[in-house]
Length: 328
Image (cartoon, rainbow, N blue to C red):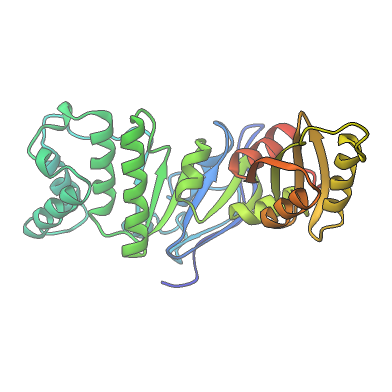
């Protein structure tokens, strides 16, 4: 399937007087890794439940793989794999037997199910643990088994709801790298729901920012930064110092600071310049690191440090949820 594999149009879900999802419009392209980012209670999990046909919207429409989950829930579940925050397995069965059981429930013959299960367990790094009872698995091992469990039916879409909670940092990195590999190699569409900013930025092609049941913005990090920070998505920090002054030397440090500020402001793409404790903060429309260095050195000022800073998800998240989403 090409084009949009997920289409949510005017989607709304209420529980009494509480609106969990409010007039949501969202599309996800085939093969894309899309991140649903927002605090707990933002409406992410309710959106997922409607996409799976596990709860019905009060208004609006859902299409997943071209199907309406409300009227065709079984068909949607055949095409979509779902890994919830807490994964349930039969603890007295091995990882291999759990996978074979899931495959048989999806209509896969047992002989084929075993072959698929063994390959997937190797892929997710559990080849040496496949005969171990899952009751003895660590949290990270259960999440890996959960990923194999959603892949056993060869889905077109996988939905991951806070999949890294309780996993150690090394395990998180390995898990996220595996998600990216699967998406790129098998063209699987991934919907990744989380409130961990750096994890979302590490793996997702695009991000949707959720709060209070509403989708505030969607796009890649660069486009979101441009929306929020206007003409200045880059900041260059330049540390400056002055050679020892000789008696009667002119201009002095303050005059040279003012001169360098003006020279930088005259540089195309620079929107503002400030200075504090010997550090120039230059807001730019693009990467002007070379131009800044040349201007400082050309003014006879020592350059003690130079650092380019691009706005990331943490800055974007703060602007939306803490500082207010207004363009500069």
